Image (tube, rainbow over all chains, first blue to last red):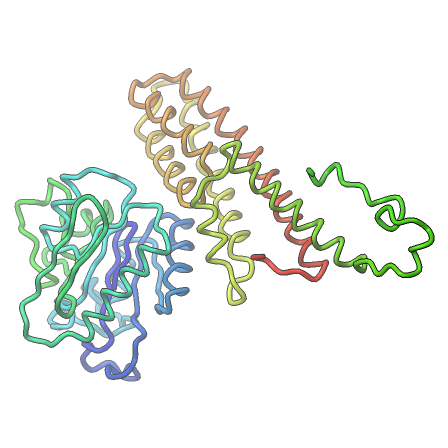
Length: 202
Length: 180
């Protein structure tokens, strides 16, 4: 799961293909890639996630996130061995964290596929909700259509199937989306990138 | 009673001398521990009451445990380092003899607002709101005043939190644990 003050990508361990050492069945540990340019927020989200038994990798920019995932177009080895064609990307849910309480922006993030939108400062209860969502998503049958509902007035998320790609936007993500020709960190929430309708991690 | 007025009782809690032999009182260590706990509670309450800290700080405290026993201190240290950096950037931008780059100042204010909000530094966060307004109206003098206030509040909060951590340390030294 991704928690992004700026952006983060999460992948469900159970859905990963070809990554050694990570068993899908039985393991409840999710790995979150957290992206935030604020060192304070990085420290906080890392602790929040770890205390909810997530494994965490925290990076300070969208660029580094792409590098970590091996999606930066370089031939360099990434930490996790994804490639552009990997279907696993489409499964990565993304959650946005932002301090900006602008409804239109929140709405467009969700429209473009963000799984959830967390208002900063992020609290323990936000992460607990996310954890529940991830666990449920893990248990749900594959093949069902996902239906994600979100109430605008609070952060309640109702999910009925395995996580789909979630985009969490931030100014970092927007930069990435507009500059990369096919950026896997889809979802850009800002108006400037709305012409290209977000496609999930393609 | 407020702990800084606490004085140990002159004798064994006012018990008459004929009874003293039969008295069992709490060992001194326990007195120190409960005294320290009281001090910490009072001090923490006063910081909240005076608006230095808000609920987010309590959130940080709740995240501290055996696996991460210095979490609050670590985050707070990062925050003050970040503050320092941002204040320096803003001071430099505002002291430009030619045109002030208010966008840059605004960006720093935004970052400061975010991090102060994340650690529960309520007064600083609130200052950033006024600060942003000055940036938006390109008011250099207003910005300078805001910056001075921010600087002052950072120093103040840093001292307050150092006191808080010291009180926590007292509890730990007396055999207690944080959180209580």
